[in-house]
Image (cartoon, rainbow, N blue to C red; front, side, top):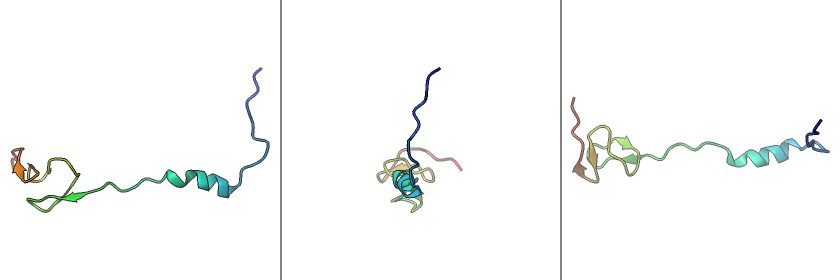
Length: 62
């Protein structure tokens, strides 16, 4: 029967939390559309007006 590795001493809460310090999720970055002023994902077509870099690239139907 194989033995599993077990830590010899308990790791403290501080050590555990220090390891988890980089695991937090960050809010997505949003840019303002030049045409309509709504928030959008950078380097992507605006979902509200269909423009990208000041040009109309997608026809949006109401």
